[in-house]
Length: 126
Image 1: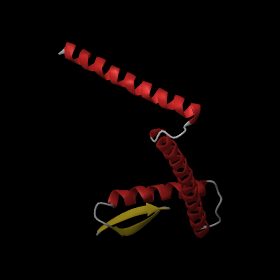
Image 2: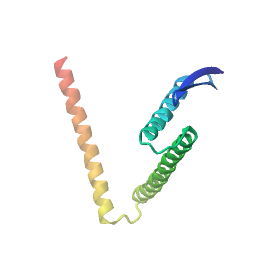
Image 3: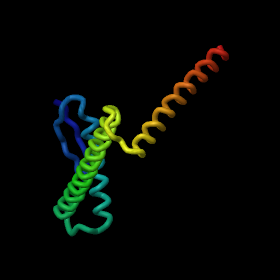
Image 4: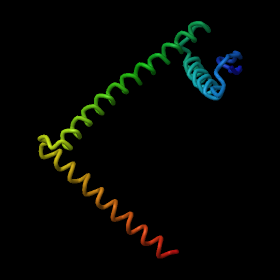
């Protein structure tokens, strides 16, 4: 275990953490301190306890928003994976999906040609 002293709200706190996690703890503490400072500057709190509660709520709100975004990304990823699996399996993909697949294949082909040309240029320079 390591011990790290962090400053939040102008007060130092000695905290224990696993070996190698010191920098992460410092980064987290700096983020909490910056959010606390921002909220304090806005004049939203009446006292230190109120400021700490508001800061905790703001951080919790950020976490909830990030979890919601992650859920949306996971849904989109699941949908895209299903659509790709349908294309690969030869299931009915519809004209738009077939066009997207054609474009992807064309880009792959062009990328290969560009790589070949780049290799030839490098060999010519040598």
